Structures are given as C-alpha cells and as structure tokens.
Image 1 (cartoon, rainbow, N blue to C red):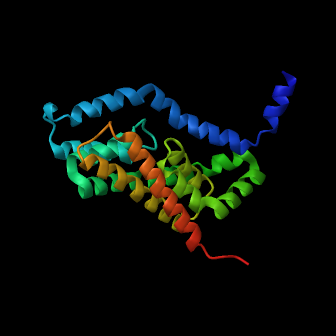
Image 2: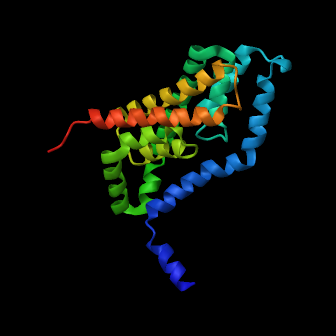
Image 3: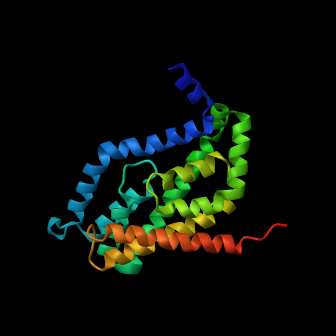
Length: 220
C-alpha cells in the first residue's frame, strides 16, 4: 500500500489535472448522455411534428454548450445534415462547434490562475512549453475524439495558448468533423453510418494534421 501511495505521489500534478478535467466532462455524459440523446432523437423524428427552425436552434444550443453539457455531438452534427442538407447542416454544426471551442478556451483561461496554483509554477511552465511546441497538431488531432476534444480546448486556455494560435487548428478540426457528419446526415442517415462517419472524420483530421506539420516552418 505504501508503494502504491509513493507511486501516486510521483505522478505529475498536471496528469491529475487532466484526469480531473476529463472526469468533469465524462461523468455527466455517462449519467445524462443517454436520456439527452433519446430526447432530441424524438424531437428530430418527423412524426413528432417539431418545426425545422426550432430543431435547428435546439441542435445549435446543444452543440454550442457541448463543453459543459453531456451531448452526443457526433449524432447532433449528423442530425444537422439530416434536417438541413449538406451545406446547411455543415454551417449549423460548424458554427455551434466553434462557439463551443471558444467557450472551452475562455473557461480554461478563467481557470488558469487556479490551475497554476494547483500544479505549481514548474509544471505550469512545462505545460505552456508543451502547448507552444505541440498545441497546434494536438488541437487538430483531438477534434474527432469525444471528451478529449473538449478537454483540449480547456487546456489550451489553462495553458494560456495564444488565441491566434489556438483558433486556426480548432476551426480546421471543426470544419473537418462538421463536413463529414453533415454529409452523412444529408444522405438520410443518422445512427446506421456513425462508425464510418467517425472514421472518416478521423482520416480528414489526420490529413489536416499532416498538412499543418508540412506547412510549419522548419527550424535549424
């Protein structure tokens, strides 16, 4: 038992902070994600008689506050395509996901002082240096990964990654995810093509990641 406690004490505080942020996002989803998903699937059913405009605002709100709400964002983005077609669904999903990313970044900045005190000045400096070196590719790569997508925006704010560096990869990643899911939805599918859509969004994000690394200036 003492050895386990000693091992836990050697774990960097930044890791505990990451696990805590992930838990704050994941635990509500485990408890409330299912009922929320079932609710807006019923709302999106044509038999429910819900107006498209009303459903559009519902989907926008759910995706925009995805960083603090247990929302199945992949299904919500697909429903954007089901209801509004490829480009209408894309812009609806992309706009809402961008609001969510900005909200996560701002929340992270607001919590950065508390986080610095929690992990200490040394690890805070390491976190900032890590984001300076690898923040752009990480933000792109994690846009398709549930929980980590939201956590990455929070950590970009916590580490005070400059907004001019954080937003371009977030916008590129959001565009890739929104395009794939809106396209699947525009084909009239919702849940039966979620896995191919998920894999497609990962592949597109990987291409963007490779492009970002290729375009990054070489250092001597």
